[in-house]
Image (cartoon, rainbow, N blue to C red; front, side, top):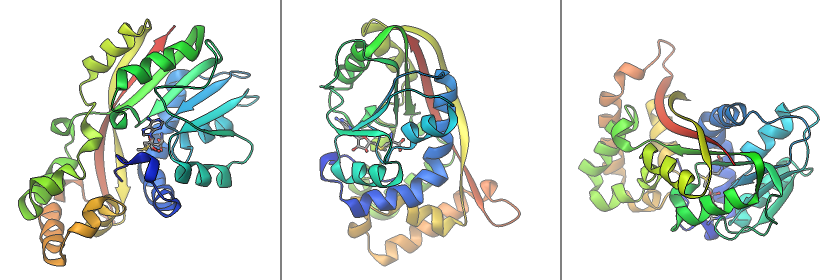
Length: 266
Ligand SMILES: C[S@@+](CC[C@H](N)C(=O)[O-])C[C@H]1O[C@@H](n2cnc3c(N)ncnc32)[C@H](O)[C@@H]1O
């Protein structure tokens, strides 16, 4: 998965890669799970914080008949320009999750998928999500589980460490930073929310082949430019050896990816 640590500098090109490669294989399925867990209803005003190319907000627009006002906020103009192209009828706003430009209690449902790990002060972002949710409204947060819980990504990351070194591994490791579910639960509680449900789920991310998995995961990250072809080849070979049990009979690779979904009431 691409690594948007320098989030505000994500170009439209990286955003298009994110949308075409990562959203279908990984993020779209999780967006459906998050929207279902939050139980978004007709007429609900919904905010998607750290919306990226907008898959969560777009999922609400597609799946909730008679939905209300839908807003996606992201720090990256590149991501937002792809979101606007794909779904012009949703409101897309540039903004920082830790300083949301909305009034207190403006939304019935506040959602955030795969964003908190990229915010330097995640507690501030959770507080802001709680602030803009209505009394009795829902805040639902998704984060990836820790690397130790990732049966599929473990062998891939170990191959990167072995053949490209720890600095290379750091370039793709940001995703797992918020992997402690209890820490996320505590943040929500400290923000004044009542945690209704905290679950850890595995969903398969499906790739045509090991090559597609490795190149997709590296595409758009700083590692793409840093890797020499020899190292890439070794990473492919070791990843293939480590992931044989996830290979399907049709040659595709179904890599389990673990994430936490925490659903709260205000
Ligand atoms: C991995 S992407 C997830 C995007 C989207 N939620 C999805 O599920 O596809 C992380 C997103 O968080 C955004 N982001 C990072 N820091 C942010 C901040 N402080 N405020 C708002 N968005 C931020 C990035 O620009 C990026 O679009």
